[in-house]
Length: 544
Image (cartoon, rainbow, N blue to C red; front, side, top):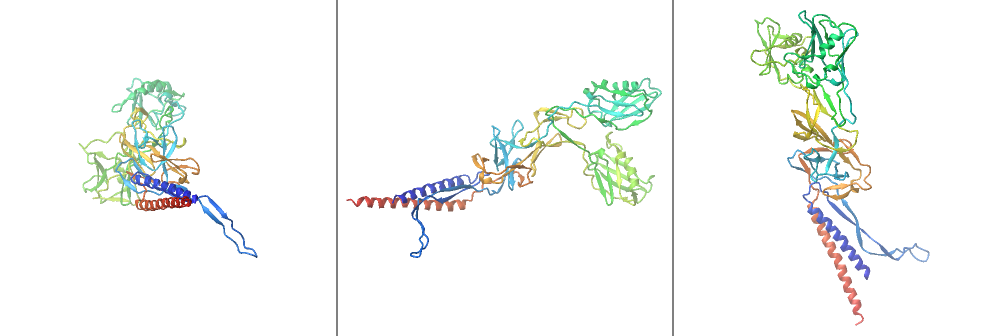
């Protein structure tokens, strides 16, 4: 008699647990990233009244007779199916389209996982989520060892060579040295032009090594050039010239500088130099490249060809700098590729339209095409595109594993060479922060696009083994399998979709159906107790 009471009680407890889970699911129907749970039951202990037996010659076989003691909760499973995409319009909100979890680090440095990507940067530049946990991935790479500067060097004629001094680092890389003979020059004099990276040494005769050294140590900026940075002025005395030969007169020693590695300290940002790329125009089978050295300058320029029977030349080019139109005039109906190239390399600026910067080298312009290629007159091209200036890009630190992602300090170009060389202590002010589907975080700074980090996703073989930790976090205890970290879109993890979050995967229709079943199950088990109580009452009343 008492066994049925125990069975009823176990049923009440099990169905109460089921209702608890259903209630939690419904409460989190609008919780971003929430994963619904389900309860499964299993029968429990059995008392065997009669064991099973095999058939014999005298009697048939018998089956076991057993009475059960009710039910217990077997599992409470988390259903890791994906919730829908909810658009938020916030650039740093992220939805994972596929498998994977964001890796968050709590205040104690312990890792946990979440599907909720409501991310932002705090006042110190740290990438955090809504609970102020740090989001991890690959930050900007930084040097782990200091490096002292080394000198740029330049090979001259004979056994002569210039060492620009370790303290000047890489400043003189790419400079050419030009010697000019001038009978009126009383003493050798060196002028440096920072715009076209030329050092011109003027003398009244061939120079010895000491004379050239003295001139270089006292060099000043040429007319129209920016001035030398003070840091370089302070170390001009470090320039040394070696050798016994005399310097060839009226010669140009071109861009033979080497070495000169820039110094860096521990913690300095590692930059990758992205070379300049020429702007291009293609018209039929004629391709015009404006020279890698000229970078993006000719972007958006157009070329128009004009027929003029009175023209004195097969092709002559002028440019309206203001409207960015290059006009090529010819006395022929079509201009051969070679003639077009010659005209562009010698183009002149139309009066009153502006000037072409001194560092633009027109000789770099190349017109490419088949041997018989030509450009007809009366044609206006599309705008030149794809030109890019030399730039510096950050790299990601993949050698030190998972780390916090932080915006660096403001970057400064102290020597005005167009490349960043100093990081300030304040947090860089970025605009237009965006996160790509591959996890790369970019922002606009000083008219440049800076990559500041890459978010990684965790691939977990058995997510069912994760334990719920509240605040939409899960932790790895045991039985998850080996957890690996992936770039979004690679391996087993999905890509990121910006400006949205993952909705709860709770299905209200299923929850209400389960609620009805739980209610009826609870009601039926309560009846077992009620009827059992009535039967015990009848048993007690037998003594009356």
